[in-house]
Image 1 (cartoon, rainbow, N blue to C red):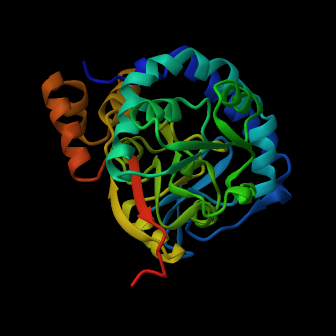
Image 2: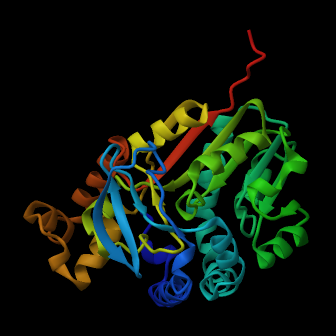
Length: 333
């Protein structure tokens, strides 16, 4: 059976999380002096085109690479406090994720571990940044028990879970993990990219954890993905202040070049774009302005929708993006 949005994001839990997220965002915006203008987090151009407002935040499209991003954006210090203390963050860690963790293990974390293992070859050490409750690390360890694993995680509740599971854990953000500098053959970071205001700094911090020649594997939301492009302001994943940055494929390519990293692959192996759009359109069909898209999403049979999702994956038009890069080994011949 195909993965469905409802399997991993129950409507009642998601609705409460989004409500808390919006309330946290409104509270954060009371300190408007803490908002900072930023150039495109992908290509670095400063040619923003107004897209729409969401939760009180302004979203723009880059005139250069078509990345979607919040601008102005809360400062790094404000975001760090928000993730540590926000009601929505606490709800995610203590209510939402525990309720769906095991439902996500087989369809999400096991394939994720298998994909990383295929890229990684035979590493000695892997570090996962933003490790959450450690499900990916558990699944990867089951595949490669000989590999030393470590977690970097800022959430107090998740840190307690990681340590209870016996996973070597540093509490904090990637830039606070200097004790593990240049120690990993593989550094992974899943579903964090959209949360940060400065992706270049994130990639720099991830590269600092990797050995020269080491792999950096990142997943996140793509602003060029079908569901985000189609739904716009109605897209539930576009949820500032939790989600702030939605790189296009071109934006991701230019970001890696700016960071001095070697691109191995950028792909979009997403499974849920069509289901996400269909769920929103069933509630409000008017969100689908294109009659061909409306027919496909609301009237075509399940097989046609599955075929379209496969085409989105192959053409790199899913909103679920994987970036696989390498820290250059300057000492290599």
